[in-house]
Image 1 (tube, rainbow, N blue to C red):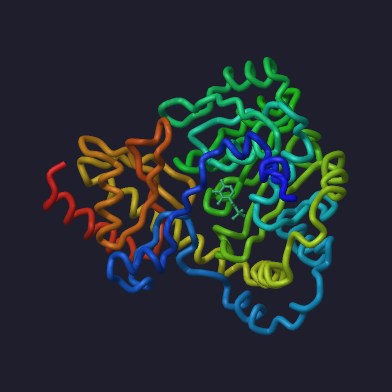
Image 2 (image 1 turned 90 degrees about the horizontal axis):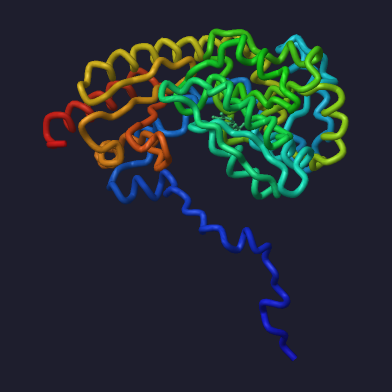
Length: 371
Ligand SMILES: *Cc1c(COP(=O)(O)O)cnc(C)c1O
């Protein structure tokens, strides 16, 4: 006797009601549509590192002989190297499959059904995306027009909702602004855990907050190898956490959340820091050149950025159409169909050749297309 499907397959109602995820086309599919080779696309839409991984990381991957063995659940070797890199005891460090893994773990650790996390959009989308999956509720305290934080609003929201977590991103994705140190200090006085996402710290030329964690019982710092070390495809990130928090995270994390390939590549990257830091300096220089070149277009208004991307307000023409016109020319930038960002595009700092291709496409669009 067959039961009715709905009594056997009972999807969580809130997830069943969610709209289907519409993934962006893969680079290959996209290139095929345009009739271009994937290698010729100028990919400036995801803040990836145009110089790729350290050659030492690639060598370590080529030599990998332990793919048939489960990884060390404690990732001791990598955490020791991270400890030296950050100047923080390894006991404060937890690694994972990207900073994204740590975001979800923190939500799982802190959020009971209907608990609140405070989110400050426009910002990285995963905080608000993951919160309801973890049964939490994101309360938004929007940033001001210049992307600075509404600190009074955050304080009110944290207290009013008894928020368990406050997500901050510095430099902020998508505009690249740093949160002033005195603002972080002020927010650390709140009765909540402050999760400070420093995915772009290496590009910021500002000190990390990681070293403060051992003296700040409610500060969590998130970092990643995706951007500065060019390992986005391998998924390796980490959190720097107070003792009282990390002990509980160890209990709930998947034992093998960092795979052996990501582990050896991350370690080799930390053994090759001067080279990676030279690439970071090239990207910073290119970001500055990119921002200046973009400012010369009357319809683009770049924001000052301390990361590896530049956000531009688009004036007098549609940002969405500009994004599409660039894509038709094989130049991929990021358009966000979201409040506060619909008249903006975000462009990653790439190689000088990629900047030239972008600028050539922009000149063509400026000349050929009426807004
Ligand atoms: C890219 C990005 C991440 C994701 O990092 P992964 O380590 O690749 O998961 C996290 N936070 C911000 C702000 C990012 O831009």
